[in-house]
Image 1 (cartoon, one colour):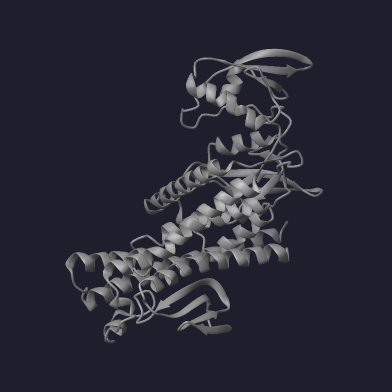
Image 2 (spheres, rainbow, N blue to C red):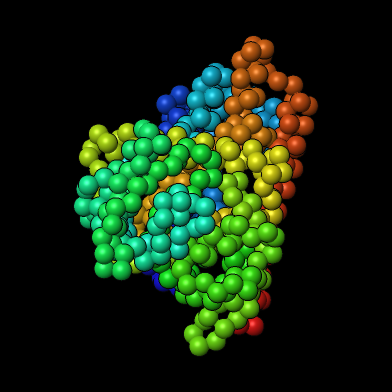
Length: 451
C-alpha cells in the first residue's frame, strides 16, 4: 500500500466530513444558534481548541463527525433530554422552524456544492485522460452493427465520413451524431484490411436499448481493475490476471471477455486466468447492478498515448452541473432498485471501509479519477442525508416542516418513537454495511491464500 495514497484518502474523507458539518456550523452562526462542539471523527478527543464559544475537536475514528448545536437536537440527544431543558436564546429549538430547516439543509447542500466544484476543477483545470489507441478493431460481437456492416477483427479504421481518424474514440462522435440524426443513412468508413483499403457503410439505431455498435479497439484480456465489493474481488481475481477461457471458450480480446460474461446463459461463470506462470480456475457469480449483470472487472488500459482533455470555463460550468444531475439520477435509481429488491442488498451495500478502499483504488489511477470518486461520494452523501429517515438531516427536516404546518411543537412521545425507529433503521443498516465490508475482505483474503 502506498502511504501517499492513504494520506490522500484520509484527507479526502476528512474534507467530505468537514464540508458537511461546516455547512451546519455556518447556518447555525447565520441564525445566531450557538454551537457547543464541532468535531471531526468519533471517540475520545485527541486535540481540541475552544474558539468563539465552540469547542473544535479532533477524534481518532475517521468515520464521521458532528456539529452539536446549543441545546441539542434529535441527531445527538433524546427528545426527553431536550424537552427537559427550558429554551433560551441561542438554543437550537429556540430558532424558528424554517431556520432549523435551513440549518439541516446546509450540510447536504455543501456536499452538493463541493461535488459541483470538484467536477468543475477536473473538467477545467486538471483534465481527463482519454485513451488514444490505434484504431484497429478487436472482437466484433455477433449481431452488432459492426458485424452487420461486415467489419472484422483486425480492420483499421482510417477515416469516418471522410474525416481522417486521429483520435479514435473522439472521432467516433462524428459517426454517433450522424446516426442519431438518421439511423437508416449509412456513414462511410474507410477501412484498411490485409493491406487493401475499402469503403464500408455503417448504419444502425443507437437509441435502441441494449444496442451494441461493436466498434471496440483491440485490447488484451488482462484485468486492469477489480472493483471493491464485487463478485470478482470476492472470488479472488486480481489486477494483472490474464483471462484465458470463459465457460470453456478460449478468449484473446477484452471485447470477447465482456461479451461472453454479458451473454452467458447462467450467472455462474467459469474462468481460467493466468497469473505469473500459473493458471488458476475461478468460479464467479454474476450479479445485477441496476444496469446489467456483471462481475466487477475492467481492462488494463494503455495510457501511454492518452491525451488530456480540458474544457473551456463556461463549458466546464455547464458540464459539471449536468454531471451532478446525472449522478443524482443514477443514485436515486439505484436506491429505488435496492428498496424494491431488484438489486441485491448484500452485493451492493458497502460501508465506510468499502468507501475508503474504493477511494484508495482510484487514487492509484490518477488525480482526475480520484477526485471524480470524491465527487460521486459527495453526491451520495447529499442524497442519503436528505432521505426522510429518523436521525439523518432529511428526517429532521420532516419534523421541522410538520412543526411549521401545525404551528406548534410535536409531542415528546411522538418524537421519541420517531427517533427510536430512525436509530433502529439507520443503525441496523450501518451495522449490516460494516459487517458486509469485513465479510467481503474475509472472502478476498481467504481465497487469495490458495492462489
